[in-house]
Length: 378
Image 1 (cartoon, rainbow, N blue to C red):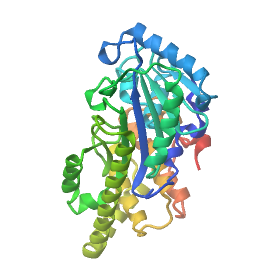
Image 2: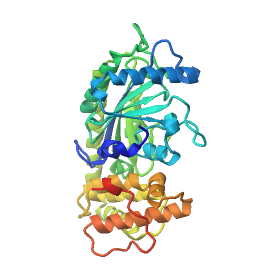
Image 3: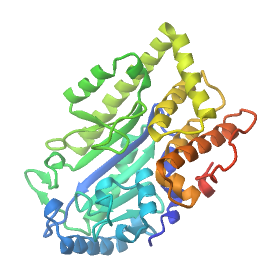
Image 4: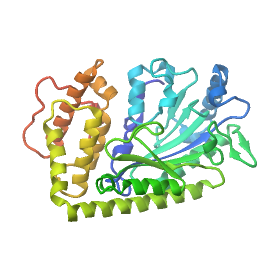
């Protein structure tokens, strides 16, 4: 099957703003890197290796109850815009898609469960990337989902494992458990109080790291950070999960304290920043994605501080996804050059804020694109 619209909830259940601290933590992801014995992996893998791995994986899926009824998307067969939508929804990575200007390598695929928020990327950096993506702070729950699926697949597939080093992976930092857990956080309080540098430095000292919206190699925009473990060797999966959960909860407390400092020491400035951000989103006729993310950060802060009534966290989460380029192009039905994309983005934001922000009137203006949410909007 190569129709991503068949995915339950269109792969967007992580936007629902459930789970602990959903106003600060957008999502939790846990993934395991696995490789198969007898096949080259990483940069040394050739087409025959990738196709053999895919064939073995497909056979294992047929014997695995936890993936019954799931959808397999072969990346070379998925239309270019659909591939970008999968990336924007964080269901696949840039590495799986290969060269941005060409077709993904043969043998690359993603298996998406029809029951649980789990998936498996095939022939990304490693042969298999088993992963779960949940809304809010739910590290242990995401780990349980991934662990169960990994055990099911491990009974059918010969994982590359060393008695001393553990699971063997393409990147040395993943050797051992092969586990990478990450939490996608919004930390405007720490940024505005200029405490973020100390916090990020502290993360490095306790074995964690941070990245941007799309993970490794992506920039931080809109005060959104992905915090994850840095190494996996020498620690059990349970130790890594517990450590990340404990540190992230400390960061959340730092962020909450920073927000209270803003209210106490700079309430007027903070309120002005929030309402200016809302005003620009509500009435702008052109918005770049980076500008949108920065403005959404202010509005999200205002909603969390109860200074900006009439919006839901889910609305802001949805806006962040459906304003990305491929989603806008799908709604418009054709490619959009940057200036036109910026206009469509602003129009979509105006419509959402008018209809879901409990504000009278509709300033969408003529020529707005149809809603990118389609049948999966809420």
